[in-house]
Image (tube, rainbow, N blue to C red; front, side, top):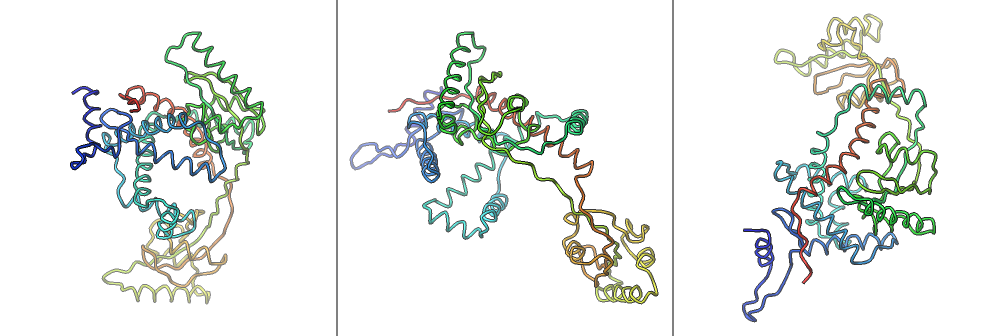
Length: 430
């Protein structure tokens, strides 16, 4: 069966025949064939409604109905390609992972998941549809991350070079929220095709300088992945964005327009929507000393707790020191030889019960016996400090910057590749 025949079968499959009138009543129809799947008119209508409602709530203008439909259809085609990839790659978002994501959304709004459900219902949303749309979004992220990440390698030399550059020039602690318009060119374009697209890009620059809204022009004209979001790319440091963009925005201020900038994908137009200073990363570290007694078949919970009460009394009376008792009796082999000292560490990585104790004690104060998942403890806080990022943290940050820049570049390349490889047929409107 060829694709035309397949389309006919699929279209027929969504017709509801009314036996009484012997007439077919269309309840949905296929608007595009994407490999072995389809895009339905109802999906296009649903996304159009969401975009229009969102634009209305934000008092934002939209492109013409035909242009908007075209962009929505392309986005749905993209989703269908990636969802089919998810099936082939074995990606599946289970209910537990979905519930965790819903809890995260609710937590961000400072409400419960039940309140989130009611809020959606009150706003006219179908809750089950919202859940399944979220499942799709999580799946798309898994596919994109899984496919793009393995195309990226960050070497130690790259990290060293970036750290050296930051050290030489200083970290400006700036993050830029860029607006982006992409005008694509055909594969292997000739001079006439390049000139035509460049003229279009220059015309957009003229419109922007005349006061046209950048986000509206992005929605109308851009072929970039964020076109329906007004071309807004989100906050990134210059080290995290594509090198082409980082070079283009140097010396520019908020509201400036840059372009057209030519790349293999086409011509780019940029604006700086906002600039903010990156917050300084501070690490709260605590140095403590502890003594651990583990209950067992021989040693009951009560006896372990009683032993620690005895040790606390001996320390407080001056009969023994915490250090010598820890060295003699602690069952934490890693710290016993160091007189119970757990050196500088972020409390967030510790057992929750241990973390709670050391965050509430004064320096030099000894806790009452308390239970963790490891056994019974007493602990003394020896010191607190606020540290700037350690060398390891700096390397992690440099790795993240390089990775994010490469990810942005590779994600665009990956999408264009899978789009070119997919069979896509947009069916004519009946």
